[in-house]
Image (cartoon, rainbow, N blue to C red; front, side, top):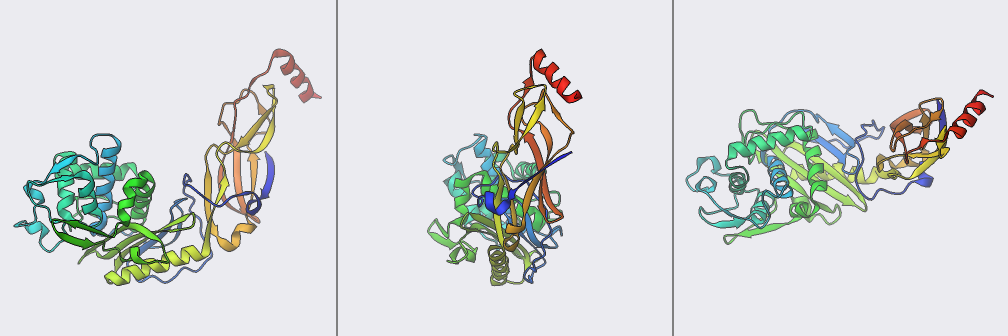
Length: 389
């Protein structure tokens, strides 16, 4: 195998701007804050890395955090052009709170049966008001029934790889067999943030007025002028405790904090705030490699041309403790003794290794950045003779 040492990461890599990275679960030596909740996660949204967690895979009642998946399913229906945001939905009686014991004492948009409401406004009612009635109205419109919509929710659970999540309702009120985890909710939140940016903007709206009733978004961190939180959602039932997911933007970095089983509405905000501040103060997200940009070149026997550029076929990012960024270096290793033509575009020929001294932090595929065809007979004979000498 051939090894090639690259320049120090701190000298050649730019600060992250957009997100296309793979998850890289690394263990960090930093001491995280003590969190007073049943479970929690702090995730770097750009890379999907978990920076710290506690009981992240513990199955818990999601309460109104269920509505994140409700919104995600609606957004996918819009993406597939089955519906549009401007479609007008006729509210059915099953979405009317009056006389419906299921909705007693729960959060509502205060819809009335027979009124026509756009998909856009119903979505705002789900996100801002946490309206259980709005969830039902959307479910009926998108899937024909609540049961069919729940089936779609669980199909997306599978597609997103949420291995500890199952839904039984469209709104999150307590139901047997309904559960999720802080880890899965962080993944879902990341999918929402990067899935449809203009839809995600709704999560940052602070209030909604409908049928003469103005309600404030229950995510109090939206009013924090230092954290720059722009979403996502809160939830509470007696069995779930106080839940919150908060995403903050610090320059070009984004963090996602998930708190489940908090002690109070203010308490969950304080725990999320601690996680976000700790992440902002201690980590940087760096761009390791640009898709299609050469990080080296290698000779190719029997090829036309005789050299091939190598690098990554995708943008690669990593979140690291701020004090460690300057220590990190990269090298690549060719996984065969010699490269021989033909070579395909993006054919893996080795690995890119990120190292801190003797410790390997992460590795990524090293690929060819252009195809190399076989050379003519004379070149191939010449190369054969050179290899034998």
